[in-house]
Image 1 (spheres, rainbow, N blue to C red):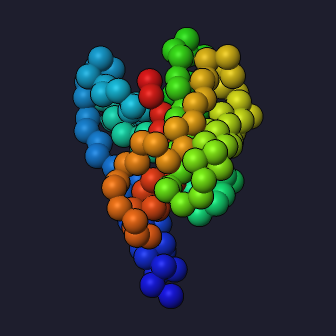
Image 2 (image 1 turned 180 degrees about the vertical axis):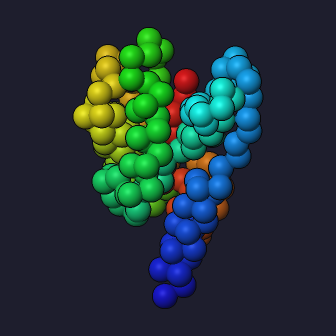
Length: 156
């Protein structure tokens, strides 16, 4: 029961963080931070919206959640027509064998790449790599730590 409550809490926190992401106004596109997308607001100023560079996965899964798809759609808009190489790094929590977690991290990274390609991003500019359990975002052997370690990160 606590696991389910914690999972829902983390999901809600992620959604809230995504919806209330930092933004600022700028008069030029050159002030745009890396990882951001600019949107015109109709008065000549450019609004910068941060895009999360991490998508999270459920335990032992590599299918994309609704929250992950929303983040990836923003990345797809940024990457369409761009000539930049992007690396998607798949990760897993510490449960399972090293080999299993390497394969799971690869499946997660490939799921992200495949989704972006279906959105019109050039697949040849997308690299995937798996680190399995080798590079945890959070050190710990509890549900909260594991939830943060089941992820794919983008490196521009």
